[in-house]
Amino acid sequence: MDARSIYLPALAMAGLTFAVWWRMYFMRIGQMKRERIHPQKVATSAQASALLTDSRAADNFSNLFELPVLFYVALVVAAQIGMVDGVSLALSWAFVALRVAHSWIHVTYNKVMHRFAVYVAGGMVLWLLWAYLAVGLLSG
Image (cartoon, rainbow, N blue to C red; front, side):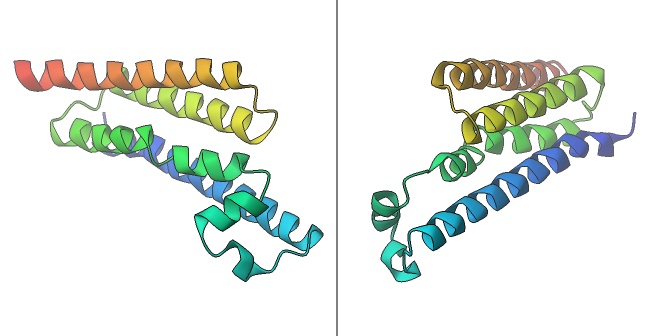
């Protein structure tokens, strides 16, 4: 199996992050234009949170730099220790799919319990990926 294939899920996550970034940009600019908010009035995060009422995309964008950081490192570890196989790829793609679902829920209808269930599932997949890598690393 080509070790580079482990980086395809990373590419997908980068694409998701880019899509959420664009969504955040258009939501913020749209609200600022509609409500005639001068850019200087949202110069700090405190000012922005007081004036920009729909923070779903911004909150999700921040989320994409939390658990996914461990995901990116896991992919590099898998490549470095020669564990790019069906299991690591399946877990990686499952994590990406769950993050896509999480982001979609978060930036659209934002039902907290739906979002939370998908978040927990993604977290469990990530921990399984790390457990799989740990067993391979420690046993080999």
